Image 1: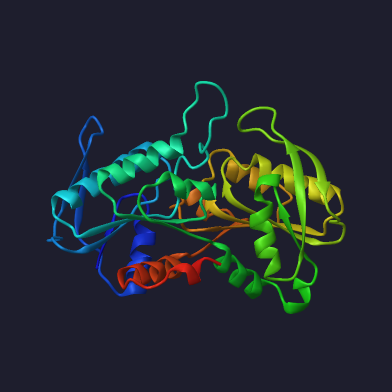
Image 2 (image 1 turned 90 degrees about the vertical axis):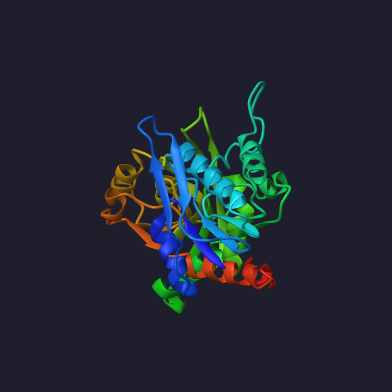
Length: 313
């Protein structure tokens, strides 16, 4: 097996390499003055089982194109099998037509990765599970839930866990929220919201009894933070004791960090699927938990042709 890292999240790639005790393969990634991308694999990969680690986070287009070019370079270097490890799958929110003359970009990206020459794709918490069906190659969609369950157990005593209430920030995340609540035999609540236009959310109602409860908002993506902060404010208005958020992918576009800082949210816990700038790392209300062990174990199982299904929970 060989591990290769793109430039999107080298810290995560290094952590995965440490978990597997496998060195990262040397790669040169350059950009010409017009931002055209050039890559060169500096080691022999002929006949090798390659795991290419590259989340397609911001700048999404650059990192996606870099992923495709790296795959092409590996195909032309006669790699035996190429697994694209894409912890955060960009364009996942464009998984259906939302109106006339609009694209399904998540399907387009799946086509690009497949046509470039990848043999398999490994992801974490796809925004919509059906995106796996957009690929004509095997896909593994791991869940961040085990990482968060362990963190909650570390940060809440057994007694305090009895007061937890897991909250879905919208109706679309109910199945995800119910799955993690089941791990603690806890109840769930739902934030019913109306979205006036893209990027804005107005909370309308809270479905469930939240008064006096320690609420955990659970979701897959936090972007600008508007939905999350509005939901937290509504929960406090309805009598919640505290609000903490567990979100897999911290996209955190401006002004997300400022919104979180100014909000009633006690803490936002994200994974390190996306490399974060200093302003995120320095925010007292945002904390990262690693997914390198989860991804490393998945990579080890794929390389050894073992079952990965035990990690889907």
